[in-house]
Image 1: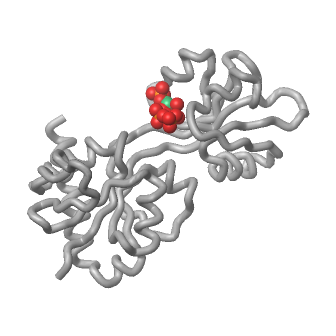
Image 2: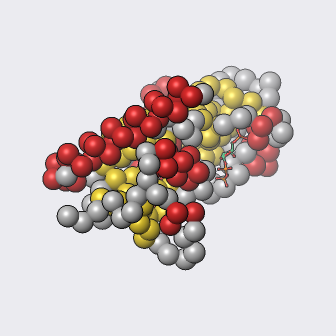
Length: 215
Ligand code: PRP
């Protein structure tokens, strides 16, 4: 049988993901020494790993070219749900927050507000739920700049330690949603390769529990 293929988010989640696979007893030497190779054998070829940007992880899993994916809840909330979310991996913890200039009451006044964000769908649905009509402007990076430059009244962005906000005179107004890394699965793969996927997910859960106990 061909190996299960898993798409892993490169960057922030990469280190924790690789150490989880290693805790499961899988040989990850190809992930440590990848060179320019894009499809990498893990666990002696038991699974095949692909390293990709978060949004691409979801695209590959949705289209079924990867059976599984490891991706942040932030990207899941932004991109929707054409796949199953099967496990909260517990690492990559941070939150989505509404943030704005320190000491300024964001909700004061009647004028409609402008929000800058890398996550327009998350921002829109958050304000829809509140019944607030806002203008959302999409920014690609360092969203914190937008209120400093006067482009927006506030931002919806990821807050981890809070230091980016603090160092720029901004503060959290409200938490929008908690975030952590999730294991996701393609809908058809979960039907056709249920036993293998469940076995892998259970091994991940066990490795996460063992890690918690030793902390
Ligand atoms: C994220 C986020 C904030 C920062 C928050 O950006 O957009 O800017 O991290 O982290 P903190 O609360 O610990 O300061 P990231 O570093 O991923 O870079 P990007 O803006 O280029 O996406």
